[in-house]
Image 1 (tube, one colour):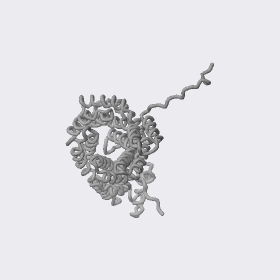
Image 2 (tube, one colour; image 1 turned 180 degrees about the horizontal axis):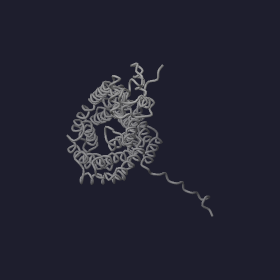
Image 3 (cartoon, helix red, strand yellow; image 1 turned 45 degrees about the horizontal axis):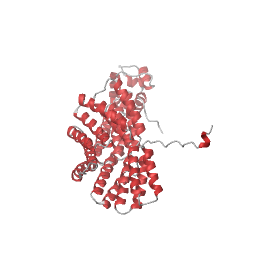
Image 4 (cartoon, helix red, strand yellow; image 1 turned 90 degrees about the horizontal axis):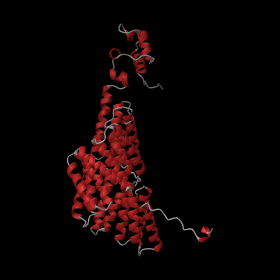
Length: 443
């Protein structure tokens, strides 16, 4: 079996032999036979005019001699990329992924990076976060090498920070996010829109880990820079994540004001998906307000779910279904809440994520409310353990605290004490040192 021609010289020699031409025949009067020999042995790179002349004599194209593909083949591959992007936009991420896997290995650098960027988004839509992160690392490496990528380095760093946080890897999200911020500021880009949005994403990572002091400090600085220099989209991003921190610190009224302001600023400025995610955050806050605003939360969730259904992003759909289940639970429909929470878990069955733990938590609460306390407490404990293992310590502490309350009257006192102890552990309170006895202190 013959080896495929992989260099210009090899392609030139193969075509010449196929045409039955000698090196002298191909050279003609324009170049020497020895020069053709040097090109075929890859010891000389011909000038563009010589490539054009040789392509004409061999009845081929310059594109084929330079890349091994003719213009028609390259156009066909670009068409396949466009079809994949249409499938992705139409919510058919699995179909898009099949096309994109091959295109992401393409020899044409520009086509390869465009396909890889689309493939990252397809993996994300399907909930395949590890594969999405692998693709992002390749794109970030290409951007750092100065290669052309479909989006800038900062948006890639921002997306990596967010996906690591969604996967529950808060430590790595924070470490890489801080490194990225130092790099950006070293380039003199502090206060730019991309820097503000990157810092806002980092705020969410600190919030997810339960480090509210650092999250609050960073959120305050980001909001100040955004109000001074940022666009409407950047200010909205800053307010959005500052709202998460305000809720965690117990100020739901402030959190609602910040998120509502973000929604007003970002309407028409951001993607449909981001706006839907912001509406879901607003609904999440409305379900925690006093009094709970069920009607308005339901409206926001309906708007968001319609968008997520079209885009078919597994993570978005699961997050929205978790909040819909919470709404149904608060509306006195625990059986329906359990069904929807179970559906959300099913969407995330192949992925280890904080969102899976949140969905399981709502399922557990729904089962308890539906009179199935034993089964519900098992789900709640498993959810709390998931959240704790993933590093979502604030949410885990809140879960263990509520489990302790739910366990009263439904189990032995030891289970109540154990839940309280785990809540304290997640909150970062260290166990006391053992007191010395008299024998140890006697002089």
